[in-house]
Length: 160
Image 1 (tube, rainbow, N blue to C red):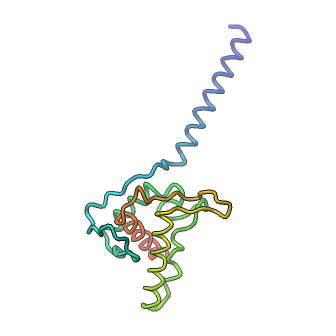
Image 2 (cartoon, rainbow, N blue to C red):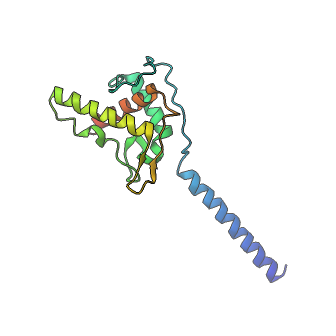
Image 3 (cartoon, rainbow, N blue to C red):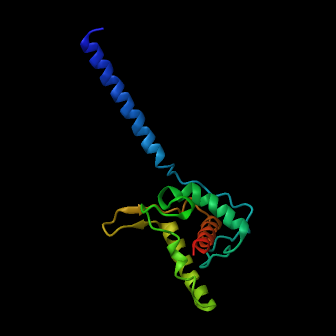
């Protein structure tokens, strides 16, 4: 084998290694393809969107919401809803509501529900108009949105 053959083989090996490592890095970011959330075990809510989460505290909804979160939200917002700084910390949505009186807390939670629903369905853009979160209006049912919110509310209670 000549020196030029060895050089070509080394370059080919390097290129192959680079492609393999690049694919691993892309895969490590997670699957960002939206996944429908199986909500058949929950009470169906109809087509008229509610302003407040009817599943808050519902253990079955929290379980379903945890799965939906894991497959659709965790890649950016962090496993178990613990943000790594790449995207907003979703546990902060209702953390301010925790120490409030019952009436104030209910109002605070309802406000966070509406905000969450609107951002999940319509997505979010930064001040430059760049999409920072896609909208899930064509992927998530009302039941899926509220189940994920019920999961986030439960996680917020656990960490506060």
